[in-house]
Amino acid sequence: MTELIDTPGDGVAPVLPAPDGGGRHALLVGAGILASRIAGLARGTVFAHYFGLTWQADAFTAAARIPNLLQNLFGEGVLSGSFIPVYARLIAEKDEEEAGRVAGAVAALLALIVAIGVVAGVLFAPAITGTLAGGFTGEKRELTVRLVRILFPGVGLLVLSAWCLGVLNSHRRFLLSYTAPVLWNAAMIATLLWRGGEQLERLTIALAWGSVVGCALQLLVQLPFVLRLVPRLRMRLDARSPNVRTVARNFLPVFVGRGVSQISGYVDVVIASYLPTGAVAAFTNAQTLYMLPVSLFGMAVSAAELPAMSAAQGTAADVATYLRGRLAAGLRRLAYFVVPSAIAFLALGDLLAAIIYRSGKFTTADSRYVWAILAGSAVGLVAATMGRLFASTCYALRDAKTPLRYAIVRVTLTVVLGYLSALPLPRALGIDQRWGAAGLTASAGIAAWVEFALLRTAVSARVGQVPFARGYILTLYGAALLAAALAWGARYALGGPSLGRFTALAIVVGYGVTYLGLTTAMGIPEARQMVSKLARRGRFRVDIG
Image (cartoon, rainbow, N blue to C red; front, side):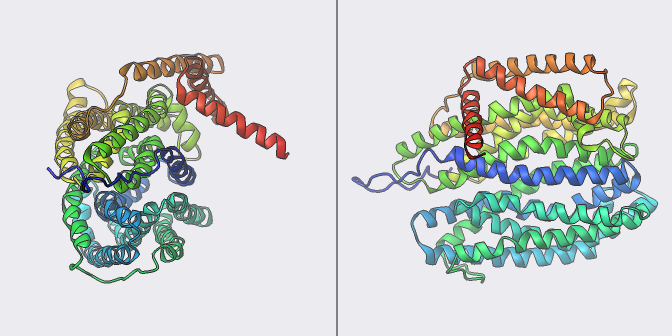
């Protein structure tokens, strides 16, 4: 294992970032992600209206995921584990010359890799589609191949956009980088509204081109700010710098780790492609909802903490104490928001799906199908979000190998359990094969808990036991379950299983308000802080009104 951190000589005071900025930075990340996710949900609503769970929806959904492999392998996740820790430290040391050299070298390397990947994706689209969506045949397969060829260049632009995000995050400029995807979603929504009356195959082609335009906009809006923050940027391959070599050395295990993790997502698509029509689209709809708390809370907290953790300098004991404090605070913030999200998926998933998707070709029955898949996702939601924070701690400690090892364990479990749960298990139970899609998400949740336990043990061995009370988690679950029970009572009092969109929204909002009220009454500090902030903002609005 790598050392905890370089320890300065005797008499050198530790240099630790201000410990009170994590919540504010996480709020900025969360605000940016919320804006982009709302835009994404709007896109999903419009998409579902025109496509429903048709075979054309399956084709576009699979085609969009296939080139995303390039983004997932070389995008934010890889940069978080390799580039950001090194670059953030150089910024903390105010070494602009070396920071510009490292940022430029990473950008040049990514541009070269992306160019090769895009050309390969376009040329070998039929073979890639046959591998990752093997259950597609005939018109469905042909359309998917065509869409993959259109979408690959756009995804290449998203990789460079992720480099911009890495630079902006390191400079603590969180809002723009996480808001930029709004432009990508807006371009796709505009395309759907403009061409929505066309035959579905033609509409999918137009939507793919709209996606490419959105990718370009997402990159271009960030570039001017990046160039302003990195005045010494040198866009060239440079292997002479020790810091560039450090990034490259960490890049490989993080890249392999991301690759291993992506195997799980693409195996899910492969398995779902063998399920009845609509399974791929429904699985993706459920994943969109699942990613809301993962992004808003898991990614927001871990993204905000990584630069601060990476910039810490001092003795090993000082840094370990500092990291334990940040971890404990981050875990509490995550738990407060993620626990009720998991219970909402389990108890109110059909209402969530109806609010976002039920329109046009997307029916009430489709909402219930998405609910089953979403309920499976609830199994591992808490573990998946908290695991991100522990992985970020490993990256801040310049240790990219530990997350890699445990990602391999998680993916292996996900693939084996996912196959068994999705295909043989429904047949053995004598139920409709389409419900195997719920087995995919539930099995991934079990694997996420295993990975979380391994990461927590590894980090605790490096920095000491992270204080985290199990009683706190149980209290949150109790409040969420009581709020869900009250929500169920309200839904049947207002009309039973089938409710209008606005009534469903009122019940979901009521669930959240009830949870906030219960946890405030229980004395949960995070709840009282939220109520206090809401009260202050309310007074401020009254004063200026």
